[in-house]
Length: 216
Image 1 (cartoon, one colour):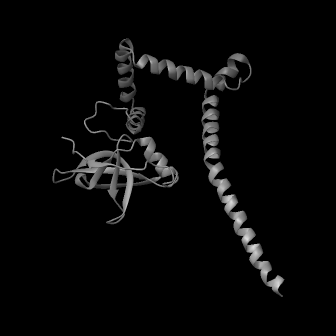
Image 2: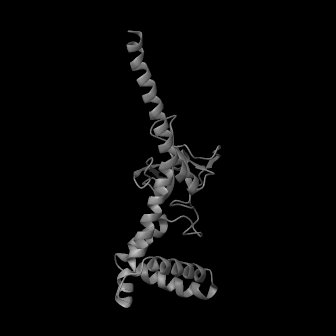
């Protein structure tokens, strides 16, 4: 009877031990699997863009060639963009794209979302500025990104803050709140994304806040 009484306890201990080991393995391998999946997705997407053209010229697809051509093209464009000779033609090309109906709106919106895309802006927005707000209730703080400013009917500026959801930051929610209620952190965009995706496991040890300056 004693052995029978101890049997469930032994099974439970073995089950709990196996569960812990599986969870540890998942914690170690899941980031690697997600990284591999993202790299594979990016490679397959980029490699498939020019394959129809390559196939038409060479008579068959050449795996990896489209990806290599795009990487080289991005390098050349990046190198030319820092050249004084290219700045004026590049500016004219960009203005032409912006002037195109439909295409210009998508291009402008996408560019604003990229960190550092507008270094001349008086108040960095988009994913440049990581902020902290007291949300969803007093005493509870959330990390987000200052996306833009809106002027209300009283002439006061309010900040538009996007708070990505964990662990999938491509979805989230927007809130508008007074500039005085927004604190600017010293975290970079990459650090904030690591914090969000990892559910707080990976983040800087400290966070320094400063007041948000309202744009003129």
